[in-house]
Length: 532
Image 1 (cartoon, rainbow, N blue to C red):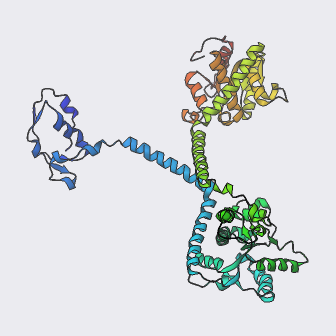
Image 2: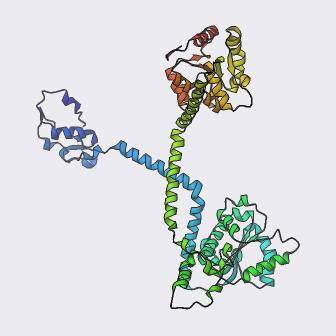
């Protein structure tokens, strides 16, 4: 049973109420009644302690006065607002992350896996079983078996690891890849279009990149089977970075001298892990070399850089370690936070304020032009400027011009006919709007969807707002429901405030339509009215 408290307010003479034999609903629908029972000083609720709950079933038989109604006053609208805001922000962040950071996240994920594996292998101290791991796509397997293996394994005697031949079955693929990469001295990546599009090949080179980054040694050898332009490498940003920073071998450039190709590959496999890494990973060592007074570093001036490539061959002592103490992580944090906030603001502005900004921009242009024209004191050359879409041009030339120019004798401005060539379009529009007594907008669905028509009516709206005169005449060629005008808020605002003419309603009496239009053109500049 649910009690409506408003009943009691209409009974000011009520002094007693007795209803303990009725099973009451102990839920929020009776919260107002329970609060009234406890707080009112006018009506005595007889035997209130005997009132019992009849609904819901889990409260059946309990006392009505024991029901806690405070939970009913939760501000549901505020919770909905917070929830919807969180969902919107989360959606924007997810969209931003997916579109701009997904490759970096995948890369970071596989770097993390490689880091875990690297830490595990270092604890084990496992020896490297292979001279090189060959990372290639299945479409290039024929080249690997026919061209590469006979030379590298047959003639040069290297011990190679190939996933189709040497991966133990039963193990997870990602674990086999990590073991092959860390169980080999070098990693040879056989690059082709198929390789770039392969998910597993991408994971192999990502893990190899981590080892390159971690050990600071030239463990990675890139062999290109095909010529791949730089712009095609852009979606594969880790590959593009490797190609920029490392010399690679090209099979297509080997031409008639494949022996030189294999000789260069042998030299790459022979290269010992060499000279010092001239980057921040060795900053502490360089600082120690320069400052320690206990240990003599023999021939320190002869130490050279082996990595990165732009410093290769330079003296290790010449490496500037001071820039390594910049708090890069803090800078990255601030930068990423600014990017996220800017992205959210941009997205919010684009979705909710772009129409207002466009409108304000064109109002500002019109304001500048208006100020310039007032200084000039230029006379108005036309009775009316006709703003219309090209799809409606046939109606303008067949129906409107014969009446307004032919019969009624008005001087009209039409953009296809009267705009001087060579001038910027926006300047022609402003000249026409401010050089005419009136502006007639011929509205249709095509007109609403046109960018230039939108600019014309925005400037006309500014003139209407600035001069406070009925200079704007709206002519609807089609019936357009109000909800379809919603996205065009300046048009919706004009329709609400001004009477307009409708060609579709002219029906069998077009003469009345043209008569009303003539009256609108005849109207002297006056204060704004709501109708023609």
